[in-house]
Amino acid sequence: MSDSTTTDPRPAAIDAARHTAQAVQDVGAKFMLDMDMYGEVAGLGYQGLGFYIAGRGGVLGDVEHVEVFEAMTFFPAETVQAGWESSASVESRADSAGRFAGYAARWGANNVADGTEGLDRLAELCEKVIQAADGSDAPLFAGWRDLPEPDGEPDLVVHRMNALRELRAARHIAAIRQVGLDPATAFMIRTPYMAGIFGWPEPSEPPAEIDKDLWQSAEDLTERAFAADLAVLDDDELVELCRLSDALIAAIP
Image (cartoon, rainbow, N blue to C red; front, side, top):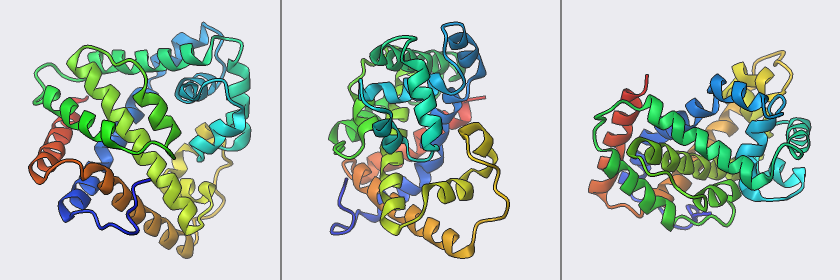
């Protein structure tokens, strides 16, 4: 992980990490929530969250479900195990990952508006961050980085933005662990409305204030760690990254 505890990222990098957080999160989330995708893979034999677990986790290879759970963290262990094991007979892990990336590319081609400003430049900036990042404790990011990339501009931008999403997610997981916050509690603070989909029981009461404070501390650590990743870009490039990320989100219905 980028060592934000001993090296202070430049203010411009911290600002960019904060500014791009929503775009980095949303682009990947949008294709991952495409119901047409899940309808199609159901015909192949995927059940429930099986394709999500196998498609996203397939970059790890033929590993035990525990490794997939550790990499994803914010799902119940039982959900990950069920999805990983039920998908094993559908196709290989590599094929699941390739299919998942293929749907991301198709989603980009179908949903990023023609003529969106600076797609090629945004892809270049993302690549610079992706290639320089330390993936040693970001296994889903490292696996996604090794996948073949699509050719079209919208497809490629979505592919690389999802790489940044996996990178930032890994930094967030490390931060959650560093502050000692239970991942299930962190999930309920951030996205309680998704509890049922992920397999968590609906929260019976709001999170405690002390947990909200821990979550904010983890967010601050995440921003610093992701800023250290973005710091490979100079200040002008960071401004470009923010502007073009905004343009990308604005171009998606």
